[in-house]
Amino acid sequence: MAEEKERKGEKKYKYSIIVPTYNERLNIALIVYLIFKHLRDVEFEIIVVDDGSPDGTQEIVKQLQLLYGEDRILLRARAKKLGLGTAYIHGLKHATGDFIVIMDADLSHHPKYLPSFIKKQLETNASIVTGTRYVKGGGVHGWNLMRKLTSRGANVLAQTLLWPGVSDLTGSFRLYKKSVLEDVIGSCVSKGYVFQMEMIVRATRKGYHIEEVPITFVDRVFGTSKLGGSEIVEYLKGLVYLLLTT
Image (cartoon, rainbow, N blue to C red; front, side, top):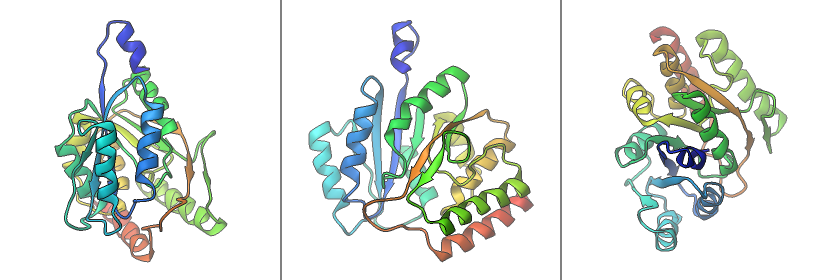
């Protein structure tokens, strides 16, 4: 753990956790609470990139700033929905940590796994640690059979065509060395859900060391999913693009 490193006289790293939001008023306070709960002895900041949520998400974040401090909770809002990839780019501009964590705000990525991500990185000096649903100890909770088959099929298809070197190509719960994220993100062209797939494929092609941590993905309890038919079409287009360009 990071605190163990500090006791040994080694550097204690700082982690910037980027959380993109759109209509996450019912989730953002709980995800922030859980991050603080599970990272008690870790130096971190939470960067909330909100895309003009009409449900009052930003007002909740401002209340959280009063509670935890504006140095721990950073609100970096944008006027409208501009895509997931650009949200991470926007958050990265404001990050002061040595490492960047990207995770969803809808509680599908439980903060209890963050210590495992940090521990894995410290043990292996990995450039990227990514959560995976598709190894022993990982899984999915709350999905029906059709959605499980769709997700699994998308990953098998991508594995077959792209050989990315990771078991969960479409996951979006990851820890990056800041310099690695800056390098990889600069070579990506995707803006939506394909962005996560492109990031890990580009990183693999660049030869970065990637490790995996098993996680259980839990379907959102509050709010509605942003994933629809148009995103599935974009995924297939992105798969073809990466096949041709990497």
